[in-house]
Amino acid sequence: MAALVRDNKDRSRFELDVDSELAFASYRLTPSAVIITHTETPRALRGRGIASELIKGALELIRHDGKKVIAGCGFVVDYLDKHPEDADLVG
Image 1: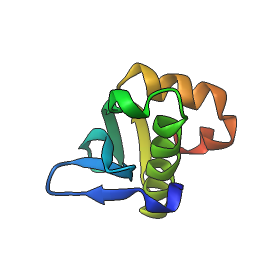
Image 2: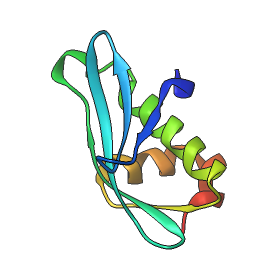
Image 3: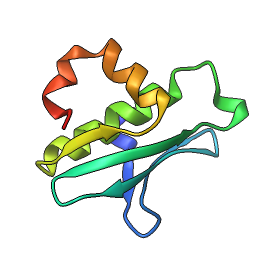
Image 4: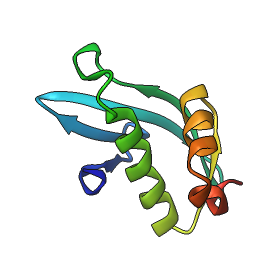
């Protein structure tokens, strides 16, 4: 599912469509990093791992762009704690 995550640069957020609902992670850019400031999953999608798939896909896009990530929301902090394989992205 991570491949379906897209970077909506106009709205400064990563987006994932699931079951006609939209989960997203808002961000701010610095010259070398992406600060993920808020993760939002519609109520109908909660408890299904959608937010984790969203962040996984966002991190893949960030890695591809050669940037680092700064966790600016609790969900991303928790995700990174549980996924040490992404520690190289933390900036």
